[in-house]
Image 1 (spheres, one colour):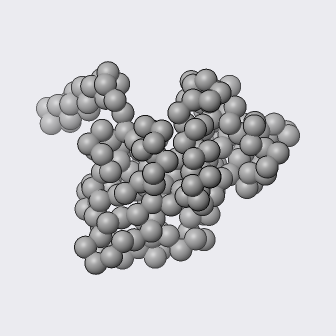
Image 2 (cartoon, one colour):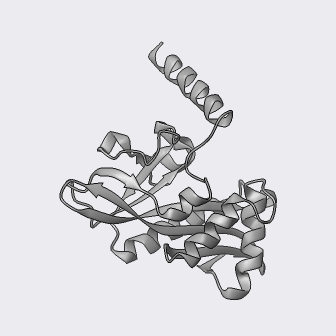
Length: 197
């Protein structure tokens, strides 16, 4: 498997992978978000996974901020992570996350945030952001899914609310909406009840 920066010729195939991974049409919200991040200047890295000449995965890193008491801190958001459905469960996502964290370290950013499964991302270098003093950008982001990986430039004062770039808001890709949010919150409540029993 080769992980490399996306090339202009890769864009159509990368968008196909993103749409398929999120179960959306070719011009769905997540593809529109990626385009808006690029055109709005917020994109910082776009990596693809290629297997036998076939583009099978994509991951993006975008600029965001932590609104810390001392000053605004530029950080990164890992989104979206996409693997073609027929290639999922074969290590492509893990390789893309590792490459994204390595690329993030090279930018000098102190942290990488994401919204996602704590079970999946917890095994790939991420942890609960709120437990470290960070605040979710929206209450529609379930707290367990608000994840962060701290990088070497991080300092303890760099905490506060995460502020997403405009593209996340204009494409309505922040957190979840009902009925999906309600379903996930019910699962979280049941999970917490099981842990306390």
